[in-house]
Length: 188
Image (cartoon, rainbow, N blue to C red; front, side, top):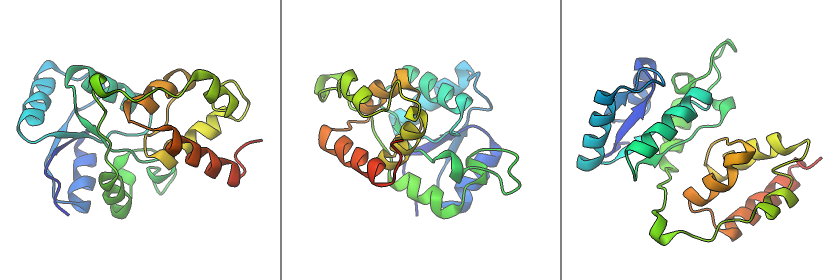
């Protein structure tokens, strides 16, 4: 599998895992304090080939995504759920620990944020509350699974509405994922 876009990862171990799973070029951020030089390289890659941001499903990974999204509009995103990135010994989390097939699957499900001119209608806040995704004891577990089902990654309650909109999740797609959550019993 060959990836046209340049994949942005956090470090050299992530690059090794990506190159083991697919043929692709990477840019490493080397941590969540992304240097201006690295941002320039990502901007250049976006202009030439496009960019896929593929960071760890943790706070530093989300922070890196946010910085790149702000500085380099139009980048694409690939996500893996936390449980697919846990080290075999249980000590550590990251793309470098993911199975090759999981990496390939995440890259097949890449999302491109929609620009604001073509914005779809946001899923209302009251609907997120009714779906027990915000303000309920099981909200975190439901958001975790929703992020997996919709391939948009984990988000906290404050960012959920924005993430659903950013990745063009339409009402029907959202309702289908909610039905799956309820079917799986993630609604207590």
